[in-house]
Image (tube, helix red, strand yellow):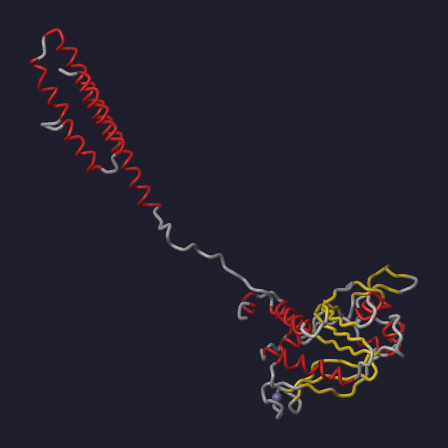
Length: 345
Ligand SMILES: [Zn+2]
């Protein structure tokens, strides 16, 4: 009897068992080695012809071999059955595309600010940022609104307690972006083309007013700037922002920091200027504009004999609502952070 061959058969059997992936493969291996005509069975059949002194030794060896193969089959069988239960319960298709986390979008007013900035950048206006906590001089006094002047009443101002400067007065939260005008004049010599978009603050809270809102303010100062340029800039904005069919117009008004001053209207997009219940005779009010007052230029260190300027500024929220045609009858919806509202856009 060839003991080396028996050893090789045992190794082959165990190696096949460890490689097998199913009960069916295991059964085939069992038949191949331990079946009625299996390789190991052939050896067992030879035992009666082995000489006496070796018979017992061969018996033990064959028995051990048989048991080793049977144990390996049993072991592998339990591994296979565990793996198949894991695969059945935790199986997933790795080729499926992943689940996307919910994706948000920018706030409507952020979109509006980006759009407004891009429109004015095309005609050379630089977007700037100036302090939102500002001295009285920049917010009022330097804009022709001295202390105790009744014009100040229109700006329901937040004052910063116990913060003031001997030279510039009290500190306030800026009530309008016009406070950036003097800052810009101090920083840059003409020509100036400034676009200041900033948060503004007023003590007000109702359906059309919120205590914190955005304004955008344009300031253009150069030699020979006149009302024609103002008309041109406003009309350009109206057409770019509201659409090519829209027109703008200016009406006389009064502001302390412009002379002459105007209210700016844009033609109604619903009735196209014919007049409807949303507008006043075909026009919607946008906001204020005018030619920079000579005293403001002087306050900013610019000679009004040489330079003239135009300025305009109004609320981002209101302008955006006018454009969108959204029926938002309460401006506070914009900032309530109610996703049911915001996700509509
Ligand atoms: Zn209308």
